[in-house]
Length: 123
Image (cartoon, rainbow, N blue to C red; front, side, top):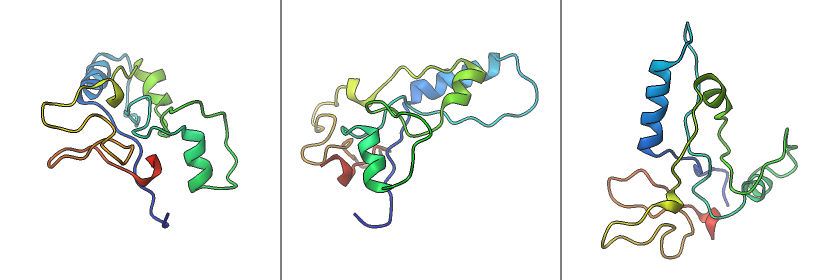
């Protein structure tokens, strides 16, 4: 694998809508920055294994469990009550599209005009 790192984070539009609704209804003042993403990655491998492969020797600040997201969504959770509900693994592919995960790559199937990303990490 080269020095470039492919993205493993994603978000479902329905979860973005939930975050926007919660932000509009939140009892907060001022401006705040929060990352909104899915609770998992778009890879079929455990996140800790991915981190160890791409960033060997870098100590973790906390345990990384299963395929949990590598994006810091804790602020959106605590500030807005954001709770991502949708995973790409739960979605059914439209007729004529490959099933989730793609035929050979292990990542989300990439279709023209779609934001899903395939990765060599999923191999």
